[in-house]
Amino acid sequence: MVVLFFTPFFWGIFMTVGLAPPITVNLPFVGFGIVHTVLQMALMGLVLNIYRRKDIQPLTKAS
Image 1 (tube, one colour):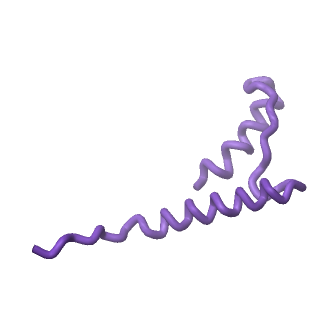
Image 2: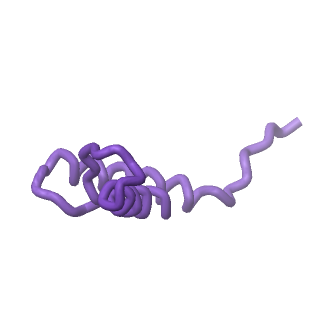
């Protein structure tokens, strides 16, 4: 989850100092495009749902 937030942030910094190629990078939950914002929210919901269920034990077959 940290990667989703800090990768675009650091990529922007690296572009500014010349360590990364200049490309369009949108910061999470910041911007004017509604499609990008909705996709970021859906991706964050998916990641949080997977993280929430990480400790659930798989069902075993009754023998």
